[in-house]
Image 1 (cartoon, one colour):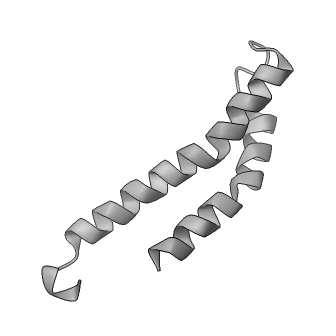
Image 2 (cartoon, rainbow, N blue to C red; image 1 turned 120 degrees about the vertical axis):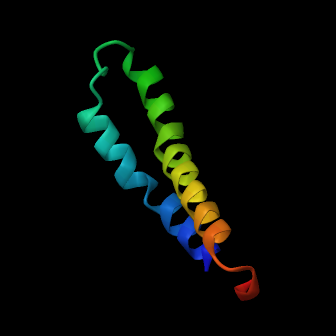
Image 3 (cartoon, helix red, strand yellow; image 1 turned 45 degrees about the vertical axis):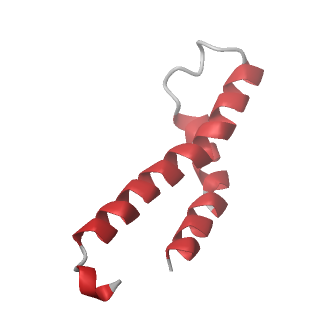
Length: 67
């Protein structure tokens, strides 16, 4: 089940990229090409990192007998 959640988060990276591209407050500080590369990486790395933290917290809080 966790693999499905991770796959959805990575697939949703296109939407995250669009939101970052439209609402990034420092968009005028970097050249467009540098900003696009940084946002391309951040659009899947940051949501995947947050998801992994949440999944691991949920796993740690679940009783040991349900594993």
